[in-house]
Image (cartoon, rainbow over all chains, first blue to last red; front, top):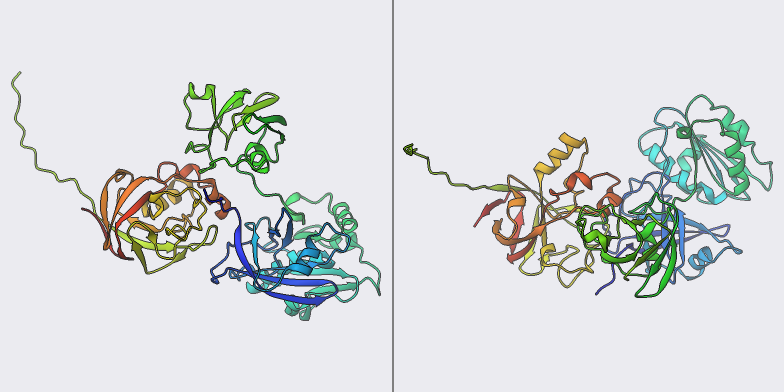
Length: 316
Length: 169
């Protein structure tokens, strides 16, 4: 049986060395088909092979549906993702990516205040291009950079219009975030993406703001189809003798996937019955609309299932 | 009591519909693109679609099924989602190939019917999947239960155009 396709297939169409240890990669469909849409400020997982998966913000205009553009700064002391992209990825190479996730809920009327540190500007580039395409100028970007910033070509019109404030921290002091956002306490949205100290300063500055008016850019994990609301429990697969803990954020299906167990999931919502599986210890929590009461005594629809006890044993 | 003879008019139960939209996509997850016509190939599928036999690149291609050669969806379901659930689902979003109007799809499982020049045989009702919610970001899974379209295999191929008739054989 062929393997299930779980990612979007793309091809690297352009690699640009922007200097300052940063490269920009353009990913397209092999036939120039439209790619799945994304919101301003969204991000994708980039699958680099052998389990290496890294998440990057998309920085092109969300209305440009034929490409995904990411900018990657080489982290020499990092975990290997940026080095792999810088050293091994070339034009013409196939790359699998996830569906885009996340995004910034931009304020339609008030000012959108973006605070970026270095390469953390990427989600705000797609947001600015989204706003500018709609003829909107209700934003300001405060962007700190160590030395010459890269990617300025993508927001040249905003810079020219005076809506971008650049801070070169090699020549000037860092901006005071509390002072910047303090001007907008009454309305608008404030969003921040950058190194940890910057995020901390931002969080402190907007701690009293309502949640819908602030956005801290953090990569959100993929949505799992059967999000669990039960405490963690042990999962044992008796046929393959595999053991794992099912946590609420990953869920039963996500755990089976992580264990490399191929379960024939189809609808993912507990109505088709494709993933019915025998269980021997539980008791399981049944959320399907397929099994009879009698069938539930020894079978479970795992795509929406869980465990009411501490240990679930499945015949897998 | 004596039986009363009633003159019942002769009733012929039938239906006829029309093709409103045609869509295909070459690979899993990619948006469906609208076309004025599609080429249906007997026993294989739609030329250029992700489930065309010999070119399997669809989300469900690892589970081969004859009924994925061409899939149908009712315009009336799109209207019902808007009317009853306030969800706008567009013809390019349900991810079936053919959007038809005036055809009782749920009645046709196991039957053959004409789809433009082609003849198809319905193999089963489609089931909704969470995959579509992931792609669209719209909560359509529950509202689509039991009205998620029809899976068909292609018995006789041909060109299918927007505006073509759909009728019983």
